[in-house]
Image (cartoon, rainbow, N blue to C red; front, side, top):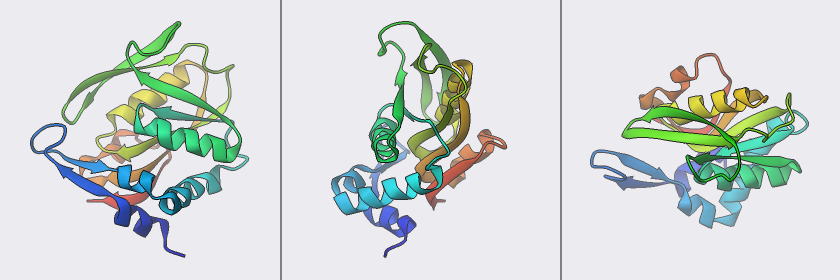
Length: 175
């Protein structure tokens, strides 16, 4: 069986100068289009989380795809973290800096009853701004966030350091 890091590396596409000149975007859409590769990724994310988490939270947009598949695989619920203004009802928000701009994300203020063990999922860990803001948001609505899981970690951008001593797990690391 092919190791998950090799599956990710084989199905990852680099898109130069997206979304801005000088950025090399790590595109997981070829991975998502390959049912065997996607199943390998979801199972690899699920294995250490079985019986450990009550909910999966994912960040818009690719974190929705990965997180919802993971939640379904684990038989647990999913909490969406969206860009500002996209969720109906009352929300809690956080703003943060990206490597190429600023963003605000939100979660429903009643997304959790309180105390649920949550794993936060996204496709890529870059500078860590999104993951840090999402972790803080989840804590503000009562989650016990147990870790951040991603498919690809861009180590040169220092996202892991931005998250401090919080547990981070990536399936494939790129310098």
